[in-house]
Image (cartoon, rainbow, N blue to C red; front, top):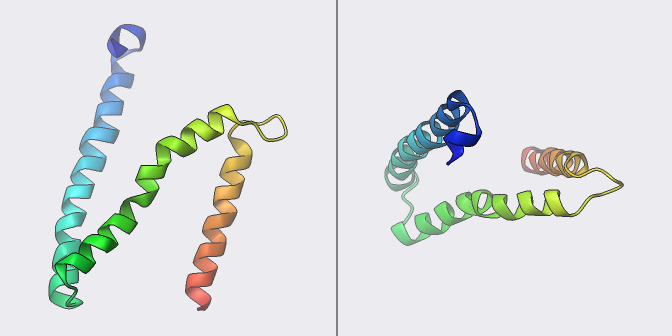
Length: 100
């Protein structure tokens, strides 16, 4: 078990961060997003499901991205080039959204 290999505080922090924090925040944000899309934006339920699917794409790709960064090194580094690339991609995306 994980508790046998690692200290109990690490195991409890993993449960708190991933279980409670992300689970609770996703549940609460989903309720507010459904209200906003239905009542304020007048979005049809089928269209709202498409938007929710698009929002979940980063969480679907996250395990694949983790495997890629661990397996394929760039110039001898495993994770650093990917973090820099993701940072530039995020900045470019936000600039496009804000300037468009």
